[in-house]
Amino acid sequence: MSLSNKTILISGASSGIGKATAKLLVANGANAVLIARSSQRLKALAAELGAKALALRCDVTSVAQLEASVQAAVERFGTLDALFANAGIYLAGDVAGGLPSAWSELLDVNIKGVMNSVHAVLPTFLEKGSGDILVCSSISGYQAIHWEPVYSASKHAIQAFTHGLRRQLSQKGIRVGAVAPGMVLNELWGIHDQAEIDRRANAGEGLRSEDVAEAVLFMLTRPSNITIRDLVMLPRTQDL
Ligand SMILES: NC(=O)c1ccc[n+]([C@@H]2O[C@H](COP(=O)([O-])OP(=O)(O)OC[C@H]3O[C@@H](n4cnc5c(N)ncnc54)[C@H](OP(=O)(O)O)[C@@H]3O)[C@@H](O)[C@H]2O)c1
Image (cartoon, rainbow, N blue to C red; front, top):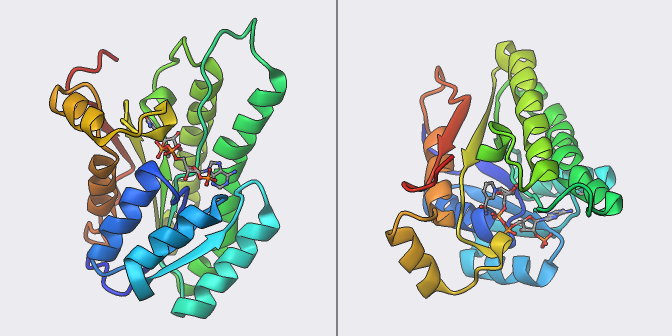
């Protein structure tokens, strides 16, 4: 399926996987609606991408901001064809020393943020009888990774949500799937240096954000009879 003039809403588009995906999808003809909290970073990306990009400050924990973003997307591009629910935050550490307030924030973004985003696009998709919903999960949604139990729980929750959602929508022309990367070398880990990313990616220690973007492009461009329900991708040497 061609992405030419398809409009995709990408959450967490200000950095990492979301930013790389926005660049790749626009290069493949799509319009990209970029949402995140950092408006300056979004504006800079939109300026780079040109008329096919729209930057909107939006916190995915806010239902009202998401609904306004969907409305703005439809006003600008005429419709909305796909959602990449990608925004997420990370937290590691022992439960005993953890902060319940920090867990709440993570669960709000990683779980409710995805659910809110899906809820905001569904009226448009249901009215059209088509649409693609992709969620950014993680290998941590498949295995209970003991150094990051709260994050791992959030991604397990998202797996369950995605699979249930897919079955609710499969007869309505809407595809639902999740991409689940292992270690991605980017800001989530405090990695900014391109030389470090290249060195470690070449050693098979981590994925590039652009590798995940390629997976998203693959999932979105399958013929309409195919749903890629789950795509798990790991750096070659990741021992999980
Ligand atoms: N990096 C990895 O190793 C890895 C592996 C597997 C899965 N993932 C998943 O990949 C997704 C993207 O993360 P990344 O690796 O690209 O890390 P990243 O560079 O830190 O990007 C996270 C993005 O989420 C946005 N975000 C955070 N809280 C938000 C909120 N409340 N509302 C709207 N946007 C929000 C951030 O933008 P603002 O701060 O501007 O809002 C940023 O654009 C996450 O779901 C993460 O769990 C990452």
